[in-house]
Length: 129
Image 1 (spheres, rainbow, N blue to C red):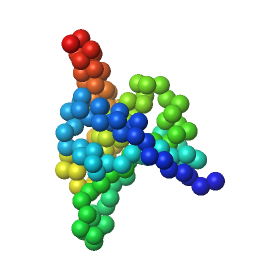
Image 2 (image 1 turned 90 degrees about the vertical axis):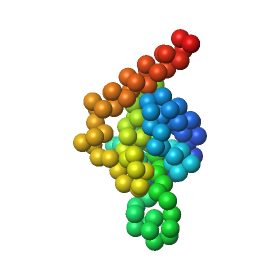
Image 3 (image 1 turned 180 degrees about the vertical axis):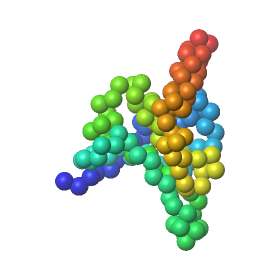
C-alpha cells in the first residue's frame, strides 16, 4: 500500500505555539508545510525535509521545509513526547532558513530537553497571568 499524505493543521498550530514560546523567530511558517503520513513502515516518528539549494537556484524559489509526522508512530505518543518531537524537527531548520539542516550533533536529547523545559516554563508562566 502506498504512503498517503494529508495536511496536518493541528501539528502546524502546535509548532507555531512551540516556536513562539521557545524563541524561534527565524521560522517562517508561511514556508513550512506540515503533513501527516499514513502507511509508512519507517522507524522514524517524524521527519523534516528541506528544498535543496539546487532546486532553489534552478527555479528562483526561496527555501521551504516540510515537517512530516508518521501517524502510526506519532499519534500514539503522549503529549510530552509529541511536543519534544515537534521541537526536534523544528530544531533541524537552521537560523538562516536557507534550505539546509542542522544535524544531530546539535539536534540532540540534551538540547531538545533545554527547549522543552523553556516551553513548559513559558506555558506555566502564561497560566499564572
